[in-house]
Length: 297
Image 1: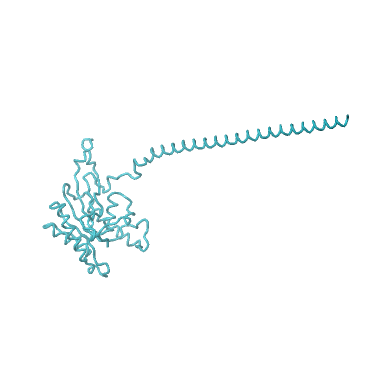
Image 2 (image 1 turned 90 degrees about the vertical axis):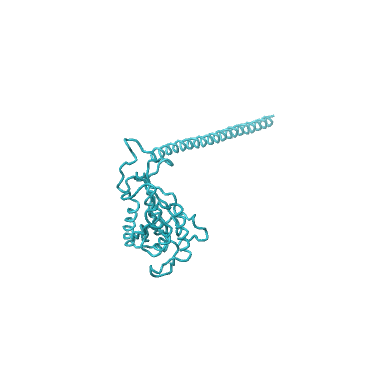
């Protein structure tokens, strides 16, 4: 009798302990699930908070940039109308801005010399090749069709290749003066950026060439002594000179001149207005030359 009672007690005690363990296990599982959900909710909250903050910050930076820098609306370098020291507010009359139709222009036609013998040692031996003479002939025909009697003069550098090119072109402009200008000779107007392997001009060369080429630029681009209207000057010179004048005239960084390219007998058109505006309507244009005679030396 007592044995059966003790046996029953042990049985119920074991069941009680088992039930108690299961209950605790369920509580632990519930707690684990609850903590996991809390952790997931916390991560989601932090992500949402971070994303919202990033969007707000990006908006503030964008608005600040538009207000202060004007992306796509305003350049960081403004045009300087007094670049030649001759700006007199000619674009205003009685406080009113004059329309574009009232502007008068002077046009410079910059022509790079034709192909020449590059292997010659002396300048007088660096004459035009047969192909170069053909390039010059085609350029003369083209310019005469474009400008006819509007040409004031044909200027050229003192180097043989430029003189020969200008002489051939001048055949198509009877009565127009040929004027030699040593300041138009080839040179290195400023150290190029980026530098180019194998191209290492000395500081002395750059300083000397820059002063000379800047003098040429002032001669042909300054409004002093210019006639405005339909007048045109043809300037036969060299690739470095033309590329530098293009950058300087448009107030682009002049150190980038070597990143431009220019055909032999390519034509660059640059115009100066009475109110000191400078525009370019073509850089190194070779459309008048058939592709088979396009060269760059």
